[in-house]
Image 1: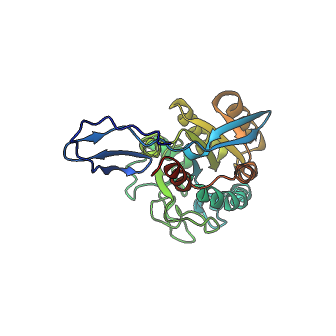
Image 2: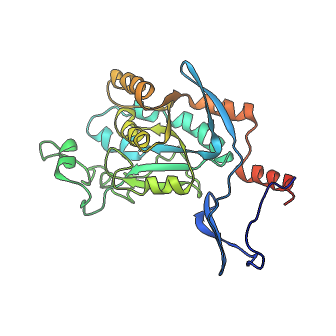
Image 3: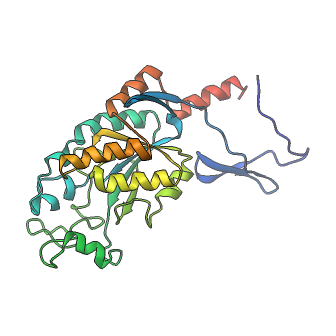
Length: 287
């Protein structure tokens, strides 16, 4: 049965061309007509265990935000290791993410790499921000060269700011540079997510109690449904910081789940790509 209805006046131009940066948010237009009614994708519900509660969300309107899985935060030759921080905890999400991300891509879930990225002239960094990492004014702070490699700390395009090699990046992945704890502050992240027609965000990366949490809070404030993936997130802060983060996310800002549970739920639901679901619906509707 064809459920579609076209109320355009007779004689309207039947050829409508897509207009939009993504099929998830498109008009269709011609010289004489503009179709502002968006294509509604077939819901693809996924149910996961999130602590004491089961949570069902639409994987077709979901994206994953992977925060700061960069050399300077996670590599033994990076900035944090240089200043004496044990980066072993920061490397813990690499294994779980290397299993989860391919499964999400297979289900057409956008992967957004949200990475710290200074301008070379550091004009996007205020003195108060520089002070956090260089309180005495001496030493190696944001934008300074690392003594061993010469790479400038977290500078866009540098080895320091690159994603760790153990996490392959695919051409369809999306990259957003930030230079605050929250990835929504003064970045295009919100515009990108709204163009993708996303309502649910999965959060992963480091540090869970800092940039991950601040970004998750900002997402919650903007009305997104937020799920922190505990096995895909970590922090080099003391253990109580991670415990407080999980508590506060559950209490105030969303849900806490496990990446392995997402993979298992995708398998249980037999979730296919959005394009496959849309093709099936088109066939049912008569093309």
